[in-house]
Amino acid sequence: MRICVDATSLLLRSAGVKNYVYHWMLALQREAKEHVITAYPLLGEVGALNHESSVLSSWQTLPRLALLHIMNVRLNPGLDYLMRDVDVFHASNQIRNPPKRTRLTGTLYDMTCLLMPQNHTSGNVRAEQNFAEKVLTRAHGLIAISQSTKNDAVRLLRLDPERISVIYPGVPQSFFDVTRGEVAAASAKYRLDKPYILFVGTVEPRKNLDALLDAYEQLPVSIRSEFDLVTVGPTGWAAGSTVHRLSSGMAGLRPLGYIPEADLPGITGGATAFVYPSLYEGFGFPVAQSMAAGVPVITSNVSSLPEVAGDAAILIDPLSASELREALVRLLTSPTLQKRLTAAGLQTAKEYTWQVAARKSAEFFDRLP
Image (cartoon, rainbow, N blue to C red; front, side):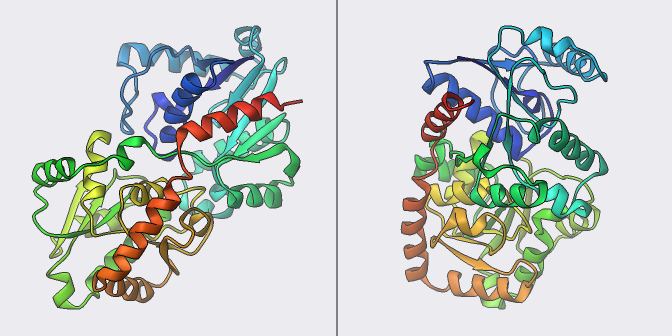
């Protein structure tokens, strides 16, 4: 079977979707040898994953984005011509005119634009609405990255649940294999001299970083003086007040901003605790990555996060800074709890591998009507 994956996100500044498409497509090419996996718009070999820029050079990226723009002109049949030898086109929300002469599929990441439009740009909301209308409602099959996402899509968009397969994403092997040497190198590079609490995510309203900042400020002096709070991630939209707090010089706060993907396993593996108080996630890659790296997790009790973390995390109400503070005190003062959550997290994370995701995705394509 000839399958073309819309990999437009690899040319753009993106976080979770880009992470998924990059690893998923490469895993499909490695594991699903019975299929021919290509990428649109005309991507061949791709470079290293960088969430802040394209995986291709500028001179390679610009003509591909121009092609995308041309193909998206209303009623342009060009994509049907380009996909004339393709059996399945796996679309993203960047596509305005999906091909009509080939089977159509897509990935359901989350329904947050419908559930929380105030936490997204108007452009993102429009793109998701177009994706729902042009792709989701007419797709021959869909992959949901969690049962929570599938349930929301069925409820909000009235999609046929029989057309949706839940296939969990994977965690890069580098998180499972992180070494003490990598932890020491990352600590030295970023001058992390004290034990630390870690947050990884784009600085934007949905990630709810302000709740963590509030909880950290409320910690007892004895605990706060022992543990720094390290935040990793680029600045997203509507993040002005949060960015101001991050740059305010708060005692113990270490905002690192965006760091290269190669450094992330070492930074993650060196944390005493990972905290992710997001308001909504389709999967929550940082949670799974932290569990794989052997770091105990505190995360939200909403959307997919309880499903992904299982019993390997402390679950809190993300709207309650006091509940988050209490969870931090409990975890940071209990080596026994840290050890238990670490062991449970390592076991749970084994469910999230790109090899398994690719094989299940190949089977999904084989089942298409």
